[in-house]
Length: 150
Image (cartoon, rainbow, N blue to C red; front, side, top):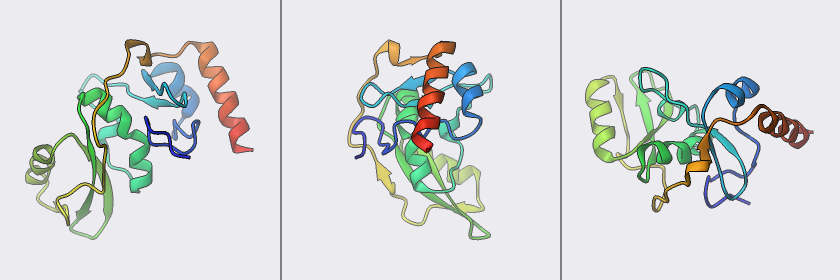
């Protein structure tokens, strides 16, 4: 079943890369419905995981809610195709943001100029949902993640 808040079917699927380090050292968005932690850390240059390209729309969807919380608006997942035919999926807060990206990256285009998936509306998160996990919370989450894999 898909979580209506964070769009995931597995409540322990994220973090995908270096999960333990991410849970211990990065700010997380904690879904109030299924309890999934999504990296919502912003680095000193203003970058965060949800703004990077993803290899599939399914993986992008795992980070969509974090992007919405950071941008404080509904966001969409767009297919981006490079000159060599490589397909990636990026999250944008608006069509204008997509156009700005395409203007800066002349070797890329968006075939439909429409999102592959967009959230219907934005719901603000409670302050306790956007925070660093305690070491005990991170440990419990990792145990649940390992158990879910088995």
